[in-house]
Length: 382
Image 1: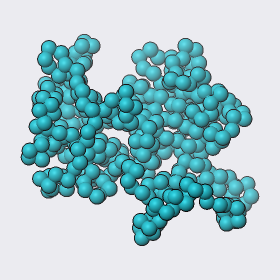
Image 2: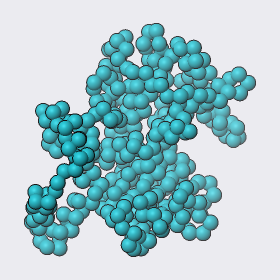
Image 3: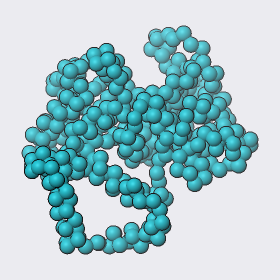
Image 4: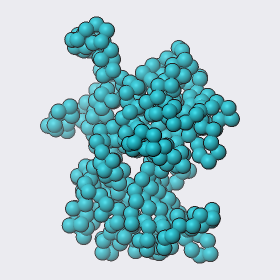
């Protein structure tokens, strides 16, 4: 059995003035916290306290739940609006939140639906970290064998991006795996062993400030060490931590997500986009990757890199739509000054652009570098 889920979630929220103005930041932060607690329904599910709070690193004022078994907190720094407001769910907190939400409101809450609800705040919302787990229960995966195979070179880690396509394709992997179109992933691989038996495999390194880390470990053994017994023969967990730019890119994809199943395809695509285990000689997929690929209905997501030249253009447009507060501003103008006022405001912006904007050296350099390549591509707003 394969089970795919989100394990830990950290959301950071900026208001439209926080990166430029310190004026009344504390008051704005307190007001925005109440708005976020309301939109997420957290205020209806939990009692928050500002006593004996455990806050995320660097944040000094906030609230958490008076609960010793898990950490759920919301916080800000009064002198540093650039840090925004952070909402932190530990793994147990996220699981408890989902259960409590389902019981009280009769519907599910997942990462994509939480992000979409928080968008109604007219604030700039993004994930700063998301941990994804794939559990292999009774699938007879042996971590020690995988580690030995990696060390000997019989198995290697590759990226799941197929040739020049922008998303992973299950069909391509099945049909063309002998052509070896997948580049090697040279991330550092380490392990923790006990009595000559590998207990955990790590891919990536925190010391290198990696934005993506993998931990593959024996979940059954971990639970047994905590005196928790599950009636399963084996339970191997493949845990991926995405943060920074990778978490930001996932945010944009999840904003547009329409269903839990689509969200599953997005997060599974994200894993397979960066981590595929292949047998070196045959170019066949290792079982751990093959089982994940079988759960993928369609390639729904791919991380972008600096080589994708139109990314900055598309990201700028998506930021204006989703993160800048522009749409909320247009709505406010229409409500205050009457329908059609938003178009007048856009015309005002256009006049400012035509009469006052002068491109700087960075703008000209970007244009010289990418204009020829992008001019024949599809307009990103169509």
